[in-house]
Image (tube, rainbow over all chains, first blue to last red; front, side, top):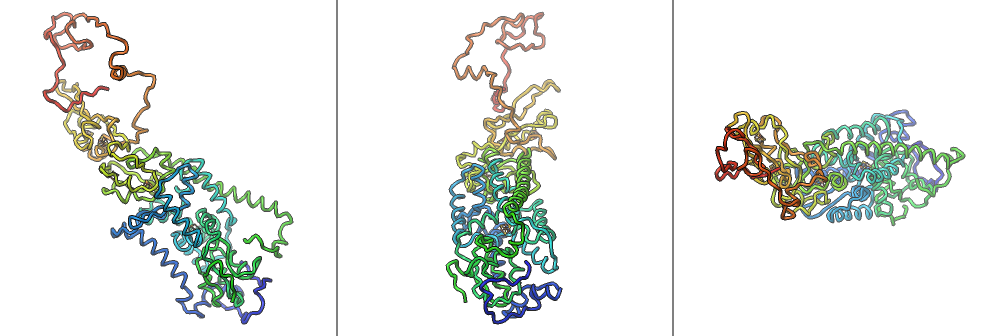
Amino acid sequence: MNAQTTTGQATGTRPERKVPPTSVRGAAMRGVVARPGHEAIEAKGWLRAHKWLLLRRTSQFGILALFLVGPWFGWWIVKGNLSSSLTLGLLPLTDPFLIAQQLAAGQWPYREVLLGGGIVLAFYLLLGGRLFCSWVCPVNLVTDAAAWLRRRLGLKGGKAPAANTRHWLLGFVLVIAAVTGSLAWEWVNPVSMLHRGLIFGFGLAWGIVGGIFLYDLLIAPRGWCGHLCPQGAFYALLGRASLLKVSADKRRDCNDCMDCFAVCPEPQVIRPALKGVGQDHPLILDAECTTCGRCVDVCGKDVFRITTRFNRSES
Amino acid sequence: MNDTMKPTSRAAASTSSPRRRFLKDAAGVAGGAGLLALGAGMYARQASALPATAIRPPGALAEAAFLAACVRCGLCVRDCPYDTLRLAELGDGVATGTPYFLARDIPCEMCEDIPCVVACPSGALDRALTDIGEARMGLAVLIDQENCLNFLGLRCDVCYRVCPVIDKAITLERMHNPRSDRHAMLLPTVHSEHCTGCGKCEKSCVLPGESAIKVLPIKLAQGSKAEHYMRGWEEKDAAGESLIGEQLELPVRGLEDKAYGDTRVRPGEGPQAPPAVPDYAPARPPGGGLDSGWKP
Ligand code: SF4
Ligand code: SF4
Ligand code: SF4
Ligand code: SF4
Ligand code: SF4
């Protein structure tokens, strides 16, 4: 993202316009590697500047742990994996992305799978589709690590495929399922493969996960989650009308440090809300926003917060 | 991005034919995505040929339907009390994430309540299977007649004795041992009608490395039926009588007093010598029980 001051209406009167030296923009001006979020740590303290990140990691590792204490210690709270699971012998949960493939392949599953899929579907439809990406998906840990390292090493450039490749890929995944009459994508799907691998054993799946890490690190910034993953695209579709949204409600305080753009996995979703491009309210309504809350964390000016889609207020 | 976006300076500076650019972009993207998906599809196609030793759990749908139904959750694996089942890992040669077992490692113990089938939420393991005796995971085949001890004339019988469906799925068929000419060979013989493919026989075969008897996917183990060939004896049983009427029994010179069809020539018997034993009947072991009397 190039630094530019825009013509949005939020640019009006701003109390402070000094760009912090460690921020993305400040570092670019001084020609050093940026430390996005540094400003926020100074302003809010480390803990508050990592609040959502910590919550998110707790959620990701907690979910993983629930699946792992079974095989590791014999405490069977949850059986199965993200594709389909049974909690306390009672609650079935199934990935609707899998059911979509099943139906495309012409297979009508049993009631449990449909019920479990319905529950998951309702959850993400209601709260936010790509919550799955930032709060549950294990691949997110890998791609976040790659993005972090990329920032830390100051790696620039790289070429990512167009962001809508994932939608095409999603379409093709379903077409291939219909053509082969099988869940073809599940042979290689890194999302289910990584989670299953952690619980049931990996085989060569490390290769695919490592490949994604290197791809994101060296070739395409945010390449996998931001451009290719059809499962993320599927969940984004679910999140079209969901409740939880990030709002740039204090956008008047923004000092253009660009730190939020640097940490956001889908940076293009921020501008309309923050700079008022094409919309007048400060809500990030783009379904590609994963509601990870990282922008909330790294903003030294506390511009963002997580709220509902009905809260269009600005302060 | 937001589709209500106002034309910014960047958009204005770009090419004058946005539609053509869009089409070009879309073609590139679709092509790339298509290639990726095609690769995945072709890999899936290729990997869907199940290796011969990988046996699906009881109640598994036919392989094609199974690959559409199984969501790779591993609940069947978890509920198998004998740790028989495992989920395929990438590189195993079985569709990644689908359950299978290797009989030589851990066979299926044929649980009466079939917990694996009960656990499966997707229908990949068919709940219509309620009697484990009806399971057809595969079919045992005595594949190496050169090394099977019973074929060598010994009495190993282990595969026969461990079979949960003993005397039905596997029997010992008594044959003349031509090597010693005075002993019998008891040949383990599997009957597809009753074999569940549990693999207990393969697991317990006493040979040191590979088993002489192996469970194979049914498609590999069985030939297709010769539909045009009527099995006279089956037709006769079905009809209650011979379809071609009673056969004229023509005497064979020198064998006049033998049962029809018994052309065996005993020592000293023959056209030259008078029949030594007038009422010949094939000998059977007293109260044998091993020989099921099965005929091909
Ligand atoms: S985009 Fe795909 S891999 Fe990335 S977090 Fe979302 S589901 Fe996981
Ligand atoms: S029948 Fe029993 S032993 Fe066999 S696979 Fe199922 S659970 Fe395991
Ligand atoms: S329980 Fe059913 S859906 Fe799950 S892995 Fe086993 S066969 Fe597949
Ligand atoms: S696989 Fe072997 S042990 Fe199992 S039923 Fe068939 S013959 Fe018997
Ligand atoms: S256990 Fe092996 S060696 Fe013994 S009779 Fe059976 S197949 Fe032959």
